[in-house]
Image (cartoon, rainbow, N blue to C red):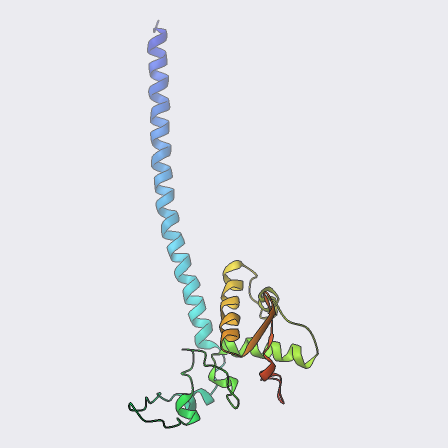
Length: 181
């Protein structure tokens, strides 16, 4: 008959093997999870890129692709509007009278159009969550914050106004004849 200590040692050894097997399994699952997460993130990026590429193309953007000329030191020449136009999808220029929204990337134009429509319908300001719903985006923090960043940039450059925190409208100068679109 085996001793009690011997039986305990056998069971302890069996439990130790089971723990080791489960740890190996957990390590394998963790490694698979890391690979799957990287793959998923790559697909998310690919989906985003395809959306940008397949999005509507504004042919007037080709005409706005001009390089800025920097006047020589001491020269006070006025640059033509074409030479001051922003490169598409690269920056948000300061709003000035006569500057068309077509100099902005499609994402910024979409925000301006949504707020111009609200202005024409005499509706109030929009939050970024409301914009995400209007644009058919998932209302998740990453998407909402991306919209908020764009809206804040448009506020800083004079295209939009934020009279109440988190609620965006067209800037006063944008509510002229065509409603800013």
